[in-house]
Length: 103
Image 1 (cartoon, rainbow, N blue to C red):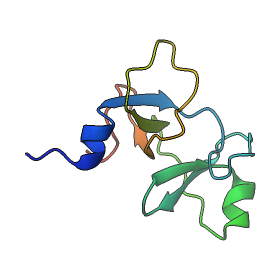
Image 2 (cartoon, rainbow, N blue to C red; image 1 turned 60 degrees about the vertical axis):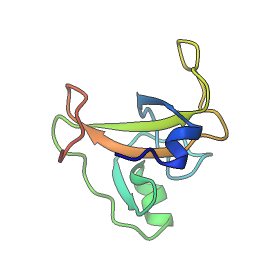
Image 3 (cartoon, one colour; image 1 turned 135 degrees about the vertical axis):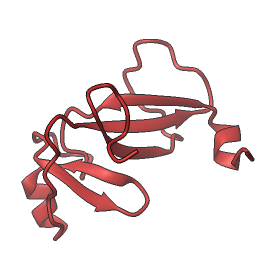
Image 4 (tube, rainbow, N blue to C red; image 1 turned 90 degrees about the vertical axis):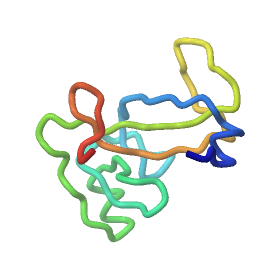
């Protein structure tokens, strides 16, 4: 398997549970579901942000948790408290054991 340029430049991958709506950076409302983004995946969203973007809010399946995955060019010290500005960020839903829903 070939390594992509992104993987070569950002070899460290981190996953974290999403704590609030991520549809808009300034929003800190509770997550009510997800909205689809072709690049970023299933973005955790509140109802207000979904309505603002004219998207259908999809409920989070029972037992699933909205997650953030981001990459870094360097290893980050624990605990990771912020996402580096040059990171590639995607979102996904995970089961309680951390595996992606649908995989």
